[in-house]
Amino acid sequence: MTMDFFGAVPRRCVNLPPGSLKTLLNCATRGLVEDGPDIQAFYKEFGNWIGFPHVFGASSGRTAFQLALEALDLDKGAEIIFPAFTFPVMPMVAKMLGFEPVFCNVDPDTFNAGAEHIAAKVTDKTGAILATHLFGQPCPIREVAALAKERNIRLIEDCAHACGVRVGGQQVGTFGDIGVFSFAEGKNMPCFGGGVIVTANDDIARRAEGVLAQTSPPPRGETLKKAFKIWVEGLLTRPAIFGLTVYPLLRLKGWLGQPLMDSVVGDDLLAAFAQSAPRVSRLSNLQAAIGRRQITRIDAFNEGARRNAAVLTEHIGDVPGIQVSQSAEGNHIYVYYPLKIAAKRRDDLRRFLLAHRIDSKNTDMDDCATLKSFRHPDHPQADGRRPTAAAILEICVYPIIPQNEMRRIARVIRDWAGLSPS
Ligand SMILES: Cc1ncc(COP(=O)(O)O)c(C=O)c1O
Image (cartoon, rainbow, N blue to C red; front, side, top):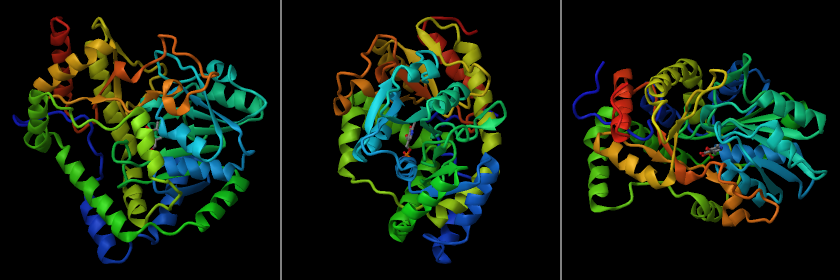
């Protein structure tokens, strides 16, 4: 298969299941948007697939994390350990709930925190660890779980980038007390937004149920509006349509020297988040209905992304100045494919790629220990080894992009670096 002439590679594709507009319209016309039988059915199917008995839905990954923290019943003001390099909204959720985010260093090659990084930050006030599997690469979760058990600390896993990742055959999200998942449009299992927590602990499940019982159902109009917006986004990020619509606009913006439709990041993202006064609300029946379709296709999807990532890794692994993220145990699912590159060269590569019909994305992840919103003298100082947002460029490797197109992306990157094709 070749990408047609007008096609272009988008920075992210929205992986909606076929027929999702039909599901949307069905739910809308049959009064099944907010509530309905798909919610419990989805919980059951997701739980069976993941391997944990209790599943509870929320309106996003971040509110699922809020639900997790509320269900854990931690001491007021407890410290929660986060990897310093992560999505900054997560430690902000903890801070807004009155907990103390504490940041640990991460491995500069995998972007993830291991047990040795986390152990250095454990104190007698540590209430929980958020183990994050960044970009789709699992962190050394068995060692982290052993540490949490030994020190009697609660363990939550942030699986927003890692839905469907197994370690030793076991799904991530099931190594600790609670797994948190996101079904936002930019993740591998979008359900018109939403998120879930999973747990095997009956007490946690009872408390989560209690928290959700006090929330109101998601508003119908807002749910439908969001779903339709994400469906349109899905359409616009199909490579053939993207090439004819958003891509020319991006080129024009690039030509005019304007920003390339980048998301708000860092302290600005946190300021906007603080304004939104987040509170837990439930997963809608519409999102659950999409989720049920996604479960049957997510493993094949992840396999396709892995195959595309392998093409890129094979052909650009030797490019000087660019570090690709290798999967230690072959279980990386590359929800995003991060290229590590000197910050001063990143924008140049991004412009070069764009000129060759390849869009790419500045990362939304950040070195949270250096953000103003979390400033604290005890946070680990940036040591020059910890990843920084400015030195990462994300490439989309979703299977909607054919393999020959992945080889073309690799050729363009080699060309930029002055190397011949591999
Ligand atoms: C690592 C990580 N965790 C959690 C989240 C939160 O998910 P949501 O956007 O659904 O709230 C994100 C979102 O980008 C993320 O990247």
